[in-house]
Length: 331
Image (tube, rainbow, N blue to C red; front, side):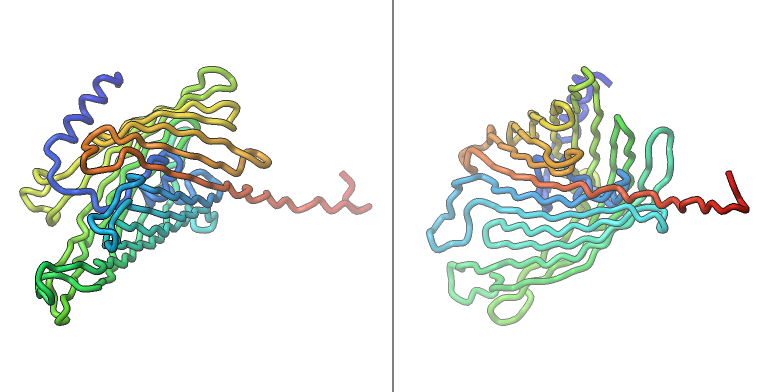
């Protein structure tokens, strides 16, 4: 598919957005498939531990100094490992997202069954999610307003599923989470329910392809489509109310050790990233990403910053039983 056609399709998908993204976004999405898709668990054939710290809209200030608003911050830790006797892999993600008074902590546990497909591996994954959602403290215009939540929080369990294909050159994944659409309820100062939030379905489509320009330089174009699907499965208006966004990017990697890349997030920012690998076999990776906020700057600060750190675990050594040589059996 030609690039202009792909861009046109993504622009069409993103038109008519009506519902806000409820889950955090990362510029390093191309380095952390475990966050996006349970089918990624163990699919690379080795274990991996990753962490990302994101400081969004640096310098953004709350309305009043005593408020807890300001720049949103997100911290993520993920791990995945193949498990041979399970014919697949397992993985987990823990992230904390703070947006003004709202604090969200989510833990996930995933399993993926692996199938050999062509030159790559297909992971078919399922996921359990446990989320703690806190609404924080608000300053009502009228004291003790029963419509305003007061230091209230709720906890809910949900599930997700996804498929991920990985080969030497291509990766592609499609996933959806919050299938149960858990309802989070919050109480006011009188201890009564005052408001609620529904964890809507979130779907992710991600693609990447490695192009070997020279024996030492590999270029990897990437794409991520993010969709929020409000309403119950089967509702006639479920897809008409969808909110869709996308990201396009590409990076060049030198000697499997150094990389630099550029990206674009729909109606928000242009991005740049740099990174390098260290230690034996380049197992340790460190990356930095900068987002220049190019749209709606009057409601945001002009930049976001992100740091990524990951470590690839050594592959399990193959155990071979040594030959036993005796005078009776001489080979």
